[in-house]
Image 1 (cartoon, rainbow, N blue to C red):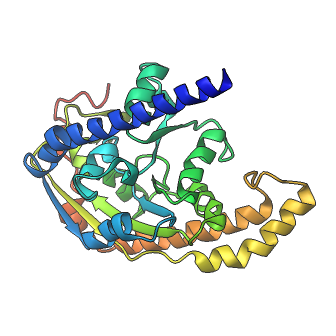
Image 2 (cartoon, helix red, strand yellow):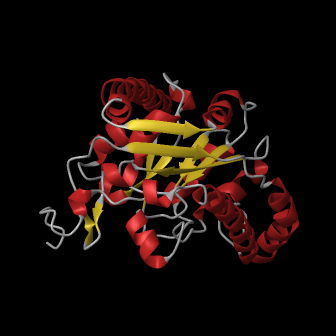
Length: 306
């Protein structure tokens, strides 16, 4: 019975993956790419850095992409523009999705839609040691591609300007993701990119940020700037001994539970990722690229004060 159960599970996962490939191809071909490239415009600087990392990195090398987070449509809409097309199922990125959205239509839909398209749930009420985040980090450690928004929430330009920032506060999850790859066959390849324009496709109302102006807007220009890969191998080596000692002292054997030595690594990785993203953000022409969509400005009649 166990063998039959195992075979059945393997078959169901294969069916899910095949369905995921078909679904992603269908959505990208007939919805996402036409919406971005016909009803809007996309310009990508140094795109080859990313496509080479996706398609040409040595087998077994973790690929971790990091970016700012401007709208609820960054994932998956923006990725239909940046990934090589058509992409193979085993080259697709893994991403994280708020648990409220992931399970909005129940667990079956979550498996057939979000998980099939390589999305995993993340519980904001739980720590970075949660099992779902471990599954995500395992994907990278085993040589897959994982994308993470280190800010952990939306930061649209109106809010960044209000607080005098170029980027929102980064969370330590990106550090844990990188640190988890210390046992990978090759050091992780960390590629940053900074994008603008998605905030105009699905803008927030500054007076009521929880509300977004639907439907998605057209006639906008999306700019994506891909940066140089971020070298983190020195940080992993620098903290390797200390992390091993801390685990021994605390009796941690799972290689996942966070120790103070781990937190020191996470902080340095996060700081380096932040510096790379800020450097890309400084290239932005804020007067041209940070304009708020008129539909959410006061007096637009969109109900922003509701």
